Length: 189
Image (cartoon, rainbow, N blue to C red; front, top):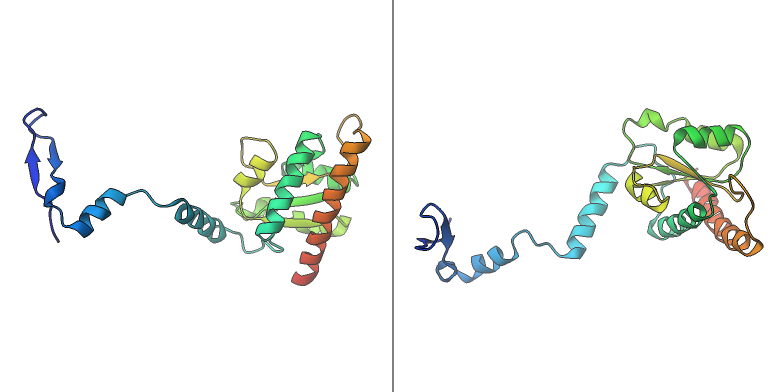
C-alpha cells in the first residue's frame, strides 16, 4: 500500500499533519477527493436494499414502487382530510367496529408479533390490506414524526363531513389504489 507523504505545517500545531496532494498518485488522488461522497443514485439504491433486507417474512402482498407511491399520496390526502387511523390500536379498534377502508402495514416492524394479527383481521372483515417496506415512509406520508406500524385509510372523516369535491377526489384515488391492492392480493394467493 502507498502511504502519502506527510508534511508539517509551520503555522499549525506540530502534531497536526496535512497531506501533500502532489505526492499522491493520480488514482489515489481521485479516490481521496471522492471519499465518502457517494452519488445520490448510489445512496438511494443502498437505502432500498436496506429496506428490502429488513422486511418481515410475512410482508405479502408487498406494494411495488408505483403502487407504493400512489398509496403514500392517498395516505397524505387522507391525513389532510382527517380520514386516517394511525397505529395498531386505532386500526384494530376501527376494523372491529366495522369501519371499512384500506389498511397499509409497514413491513419492517420488529418484533413481528406486533402486526401478525392484522392481515387475518383484515381478511375476516373484508378490508383490503397491503404492505410497504418502511415504517418511516409510512409515518411521513401520514403526517407524523414517529414511525407508524399501520394506517387505515377511510372515506369518512373521524369528525365532521367532507365537501363533495374533496370526497370525490379522495374516493376516486382510494378506489384506484384499492383495486390495485385487490389485484395484487389475488396474484399472491
